[in-house]
Amino acid sequence: MYPVFYGLLSTCAKPLLNFVRIFNSKIDRFLEFRSLAQPVPASKRKYWVHCASLGEYEMAIPVIQDLLLNCSIDDILITFFSPSGYEQAKHKAYAKSCMYLPLDTPNEVKKFYKNYEPEIALFIRYDLWFNFIHTGIKQGLKFLLINARFQENHKIFKTLGSPYKNQLQKFNTVFCSDESTAQRLKQEGFTNAIFTGDIRFDRVHRNSQDIKPMPDIEHFIDNKKLLVLGSSWEEEEQLLEQLLKHSGDQLKVIIAPHDVSEERIVSIETRFSEYSMQRYTRHSFGAEQQILIFDTIGILSRVYQYADFALVGGGFSGKLHNILEPAVFGCFISFGPEISKFPEAELFIKNDFGYAIQNEKDWISKVMELLQNEEHLNTYHQKARNFVIKNLGANRMILDQLNKL
Picture (cartoon, rainbow, N blue to C red):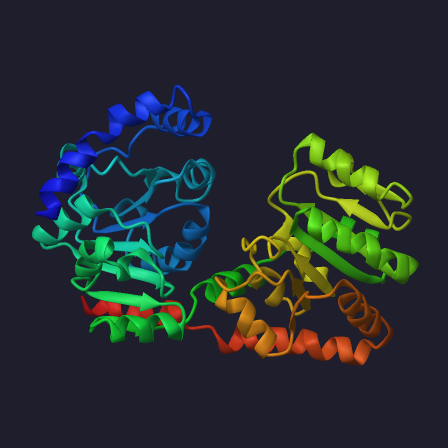
């Protein structure tokens, strides 16, 4: 019954979206980006990798890299739902195999399977589309869910989500990024759930092996301790403002705001106007500056190689940004307290190199203590690096299962 109902409902999606776009600029941009993009030319593909957005694509890259040891990029199709994923990926290494996932309507799904005839579908994290999965299972397609994470209140555990739960139970394997998800699925009757750990550890570790030095950043740091504000919001910048009143010139700071619009950059410059600072893109910074503002994207993960401290944004709103990127290089990592959806943050705290900021004064005292005690600071660095190494291997477990299909 549900497939019929959903099929009818999804058929209405395109005209409905075209109507809504008149009043909603976000939907309008979503449809505009899709209309400008070209699909991958029709040809048989063995592997179909689906990512909702850029974050999921980053998770998929280690799997794609290892698949390419035994096949060509022309054997892989990579799809995206969100423009934030596709618009980045189309400029990167696997662009020729990247496209938007068509809307989940019966006709589009039928056309998709006719054009590409995939044998194995690898969905990353979530973004489950009923018609694509329903039709694929009927055609004998093997499905795997990679880096799955489901909280206890997820829709698949509720009555209305039961059709998706039933579909997931038909997947060949559900690879879980955390033990609580694997246990939860087994309690719900899943026999195909495996705990692998978080594949993002493999991703950041591989990135760290290929990282290149940044001589201009080294010159700016000038052998002092470095604090990096990664993907910061105003809450993190307010904390920094108070910290600098205590640390003086002991600390160099790089601010990489979540939003690099001119308005946000100017607001940061205004807040820290009493300090010597410069924008990264102006290239005229050096040891005489105390604060460097990243007014461009794409370099934050590289600069973490120099960080002694990382204050990662989003933790005060429940939207914590990537904390694995600084961890791989080893540093003392701080973030806001709203981390219930981020088990990796709770693990960082448990393993004593992550710090959830409950009280501004306590956090400042902690940072100041570590500034004065390099030996103690180095123990945090080592704990972070060891933790990343300990959690490698999810990708190998996934590839081992893939090779058995």
